[in-house]
Image (cartoon, rainbow, N blue to C red; front, top):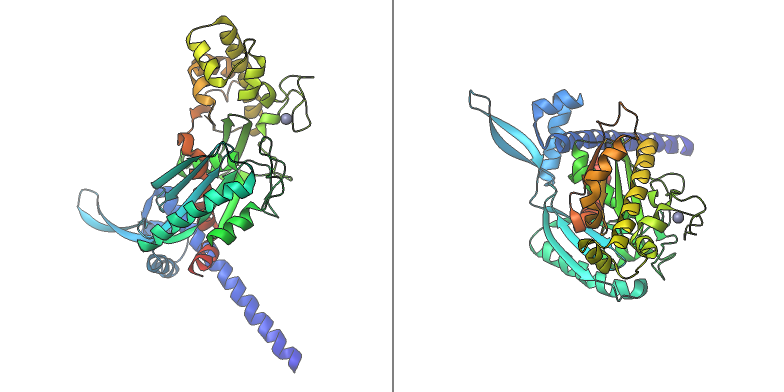
Length: 404
Ligand SMILES: [Zn+2]
């Protein structure tokens, strides 16, 4: 008898889990379509999702009640008929994006339409290790949180971009180059505990790719590679709309492709990586005169032959790296960003035809190379996009976590 009751309970709870999963999938489909078209009527959503109008009405009613969606009126066609359109509600929910950089910290607050409502930057160049870093981050995030709550807003969560690679199971950093003291540090847990918010973390090159995927060029291109060039060179790959991580979280580490056979030793263990010759330290190590990146930039402006020669070689390495990226990942667009990119962008007009001449003939006109959409805020905006991605894929789960 006892066993029978247990079995029935198991069946009931399995059925509930199944129904919750169905609801999650349907809600995700509806939110995904609205994000794709910015707004849609209920009739359009029934056509595009294949849901019954009863199911759709129930789901959208619930999402409107929770302030995720709202109704907007629009006048349609030349007959001037009123239509009710559904779009994301930008009034209540907020997402906080955090870019934990080696030399700078940026925090952005975004609404559900992807508008940046607030942005805070701090110079962190003198900061030694994570404890000191967090003594600055935590009060700022908590102040932002308090301000938002005082306005009646709800915070969906906190996304953080951080120099990788990352142990995704543990929420810790593995072995970030040029970031002493951070190896093994439990960034995700510390943020969650100190800020009391649902927290997601990812490699900063991947958050930069996520910024393009959800808020920038990815709206029209589901296959893209983001390349960030600065003190290091990193990459984030989006394939079929989803971020690619690989077996060890190392997919898209474009800075560590071999560019110079038997070249200089790299921190990753390989020789002749693109990063060893194409990053800021890589460039400066090849510049005969030597100096800082600002001095190098000034020397280029003065058209000094040694600096120009070094720049030409940098562009040539970049051309080879971009050809490799195209052949490996076959994206619709390669997006270039990072602190170093403005220095290289003037040379892109000469690089592009050489680059295109090295690709499959039928593919060369289809691929675009673009500059990043959000400039220095790319990483923080993308960190916020981690939460948007969570909302669109598992809305029931995230909203239940947020509502407590
Ligand atoms: Zn390397």
